[in-house]
Length: 254
Image 1 (tube, helix red, strand yellow):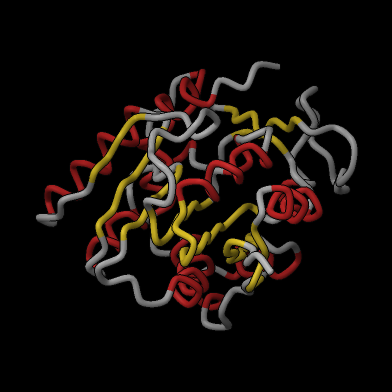
Image 2: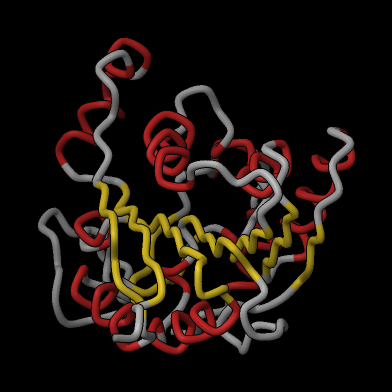
């Protein structure tokens, strides 16, 4: 099954943006607080946001005083990010680019390299992480939020059949119906997402191969108050973790 990420996201990007920015969004309720804690102070920093989507984190970084560059494969998503940045009077360098290819930057340019829920579209993690290590300053850091491997283990296999039990090892490709179909008109090509399932060990080993070392790891739980806001989604997030979030830095030579 072909992994045509660009076509999928050009088709479903606007619906996803509405879904992801809703008041009961996992991203806003669970992911963002953990990311803000790991990122820390970034005023004056140069930040690279890989797979920036409609720009929620690029915009936040810019509002915190960072100089931000955001990359995304989808023109739809870059257009949404540019519109939001303009509405807020922010200057963000937004570029259409495929993060599976060599990054279009020189060595040691960024204080922070960041990515949120984009790495399940990347097959060769080690190659991307080497590129991240290359463009990151020696004093820089890499912060990534990924769909938790326990979550993607439940994604159906490419035959499209739903499964009640997780399939953690083996088949890498997964295909799932987009959960934001009710948030706007989505053409047929954007109704299913094909992605890669990566184990926790794959993320760790890719870091090591790239000369990076993990310094923080988080599996954030939904806050208790979320139960009164959306009980079903709260219970779902308590049963299977939604995010695995980690911070890494270059391995210091002895």
